Image (cartoon, rainbow, N blue to C red; front, side, top):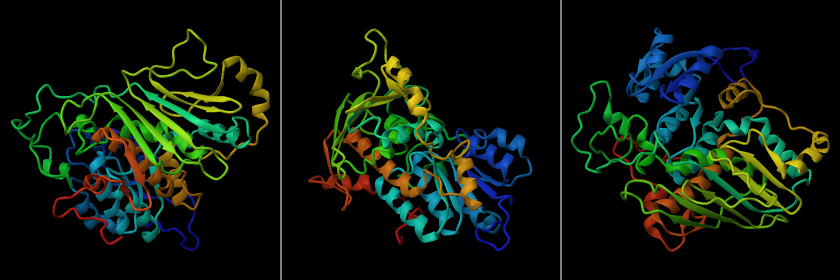
Length: 428
């Protein structure tokens, strides 16, 4: 078995990786594990969704319950990659960490804020290498943004605007009727395991396999889906920390258990040392996105989404949910500056992606950029916006005490109740 710090351990040793959730984004995890390291176990509640892994790796043991997998194969597993729906990130990660396994978890890190903070504590308690699946944080683009900001190119930033074309299908499609009590559970699906810690309800194809993101019991809406990507650069580069207030303007949700299909969320961050307070907006589809100063008059903003931060010297912009190709605007200004920008010292590259960065760290390399000390606060900030969307209320956040000021009713969303048998992390 691979062991960090083992005398004479080679950085070329293969890591024994188990994958929990092998459909969708789980395909990325098992393909990397199988091609770069040793894929030793695969877990999924419905292998129809993960048929490709059974074809490509027919001899790798398969399980439906990650708890059974860890009990039976724990001594053969070094690391666990988790790509399940949001509501089961936490129990799978804690169960693996308790056994000393390094963990990779897709974004957002967890389904509620207490879970995020507990995962951060658990990483320290169990001394494991952690990573959240945040592709943009491994890109060169986010490093250029930090280099330019730290070099004083942008100046002081007090306004950030982000936007997205979501919620859209196939993930966010409200049902025509919210009476979902008639569908039969497919024989291949373990519906009880899929529900995990949440309150039991009838199966419906309106939840599984891809529409769960629109339901608050299972997902965290478009903001939970995309926010960890689009907020990544401003959160890291500006050192935003926690907001003190989050406001929301929203379309009425189609059902209390379902997300709003359009909203604007405004975060208010206090001053940090000599850095000014920051207002950051998240604008979903159906709302007008304000154009930054210097943007070409008749040129539309990228429809799929983007981010810009307005500084006292320059305005920085990137298209899309991730900071792949940042630029200074207007374009002619960026072209004039490119030679000077190229002279700014570069931050080290970290490789091809978050799973690869995690593997390198397990073998003794630098800590991953989206390790839980970073990913937990980033996800908490995202989930605060989701709480505002869910409630329709302005949130004044007491980060120290993990409370929404004046609203004790939020407590059951900040730390959600769980079904018997799913009580993880209470002793951390």
